Image (cartoon, rainbow, N blue to C red; front, side, top):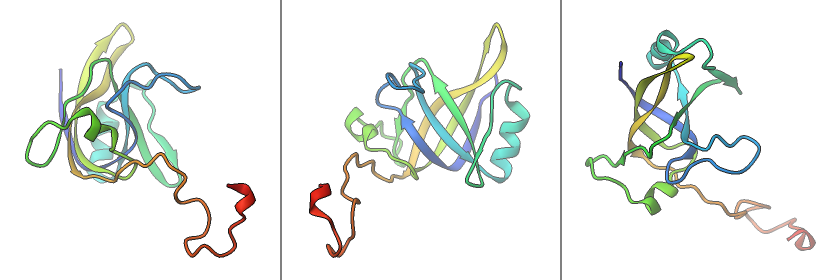
Length: 143
């Protein structure tokens, strides 16, 4: 089994505190999309199973890494984050991601290992950004 560490990658759509359950695209697993560039992209292309897809969207390459077991998530000081802290990890967070390789009856696949968060962008599930920042032109009937 081979492990690699992707350094300074951007995270998107993280399901790290709880599994991705419910909804059209649920996997029932812990997962995160990792933005791939440069050497990280080359490394993943050389290791991934042909059935594992690197998605191209808006000029960005990403791969979805999944795990059946909850990944260990740490801060820069290598201290484990609480579930509450992990739940705040949002799109744009920068991290080092350990990629594991596992075997199934369909071949070897890349999976999600541990994550070391370097720069967190907090998830906010609110509509706080809805409307104009200056308050002008807002239609109160829509709120």
